[in-house]
Length: 631
Ligand code: GTP
Ligand code: MG
Image 1: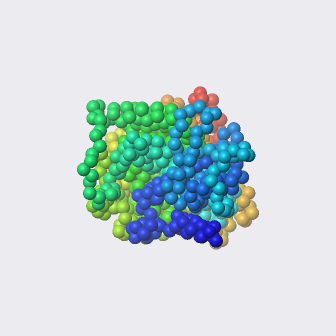
Image 2 (image 1 turned 135 degrees about the vertical axis):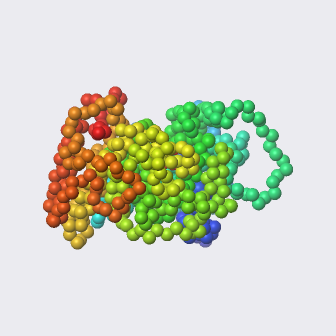
Image 3 (image 1 turned 90 degrees about the horizontal axis):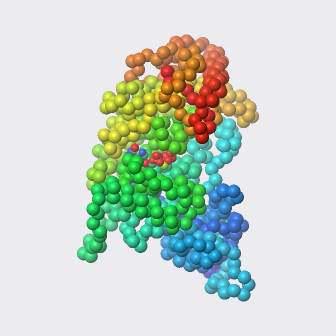
């Protein structure tokens, strides 16, 4: 009977955890948690959780039985970290933070291993003591373990698997959706990232009781893919400006503090140096600590070996945190935003426009801004402007960072009342995105998400995206002229490929028939896959002074672009890939498609030729990569 009551309690807790949103969330955004609620819920969940290394998932039943003595286990996930061999871990979630704390407090140090003992949510389940040794308290009855909620749950989808899934889709629309579903960061990935944050926070909480380590960036804004890095901001004042807990009477007992003598930036750098040492010397799992303290936003980078995760820790980047909130809200406003962005990010990665390391190329964040801007400037906008969000700010939305940067904007999506009347499908939007940027006047115009329209460019940067929260800064200042030009060439190519794919799909009234029967499509690359066709390229960027003498495809097929292209006129409805396309009209769609296929095949052959010609110019230490020159 007891175990039945216990099980019912567990199921109720599970239901509360996974199926219901808090009342405040429901009232604010019709069931969808706001960013702060999302962060808060996951922080609490992390406090109820521990991660235990086991010898394999088969140890789970034993672990469950052992750990049930500390409290009621709501759920468990298994994941692996692959080094030379797979290391196995189980994340256990208790019903309360106190129960998780009891489990952690019961941890002991292993006398055989050197190292300073540190309390942390990362533990190790050692083999049971030999027979006759003292055992822990005996449980009244051994609870039956709830099944593992995931096995190897942190593993990104294999490329081969993704290929099969995308080939099996009904149409391009479904391919975009499937790509998003199969590559986005899953719930376990989010939980593990919050545990990494909690570990840092707990490590310093004795000395800094108000310290908070907050995840931001793609780990929490809904645009992250499996395996994405974790961006963390460490705050000592527990103040992200939300004004939480303001109802209590302020205490009259005030902590003494040490006066800071140096200026803000050098003080932050000094603190970070010190934290870098602390992480490096004491925190379990933390390795490869690198300090990048001269950057505009100083960061400490490290790897977490129990999570197989790269982490960027900063202390002075609250605008980055609020920027993630804006992106989160954009993703919540319309269900098309995230799948579309995933396809575009994937395409950019496949054609070598983006790269995990920073450089003269466009970052994922800037690329995401391009997508958001595109969705704002449509004749029927899918997203509101940031100015509109700022105008909707209420007193409770006021957020001013310590540097005085105003990050106030309306945070209640329901009250905002923005409803898009745009009915375009994902494949239409994707094509429109490529067409829009193939004609965008990057030379003269800046992109403003605040205004939702292009502005005159204030300086000579190759690409100018007004930083939405610090409007005097350019988010894409790092992008070189060559990379900007390459982007324009690649979006034009993509528009071309996608247009013929869309046409091919519409040859027969039955969606997808233009690409052959279902079985044929399972064997071939079609639709979105043809956008990702190039093998993912390694890091090597166009040499500014190298002008290959190979013929450019654009020279063969396209007229020189009219110099008067203006960003203000946006052909959102047009399906023509570029205004520079020769004015040929085809009576038969199949003839048109054949011509386009020949063009595409020739282009790809030329690209390969050019690639093998350029292969010898690869930088030492990097794999060769095909490259395009700017004209
Ligand atoms: P990936 O790490 O590539 O998956 O994407 P990401 O969105 O996490 O980008 P990144 O790690 O480069 O940056 C983390 C977050 O910092 C972004 O999501 C933004 O919220 C914010 N951010 C990055 N660059 C800027 C910037 O120039 N200005 C502002 N205000 N925020 C930025
Ligand atoms: Mg990131």
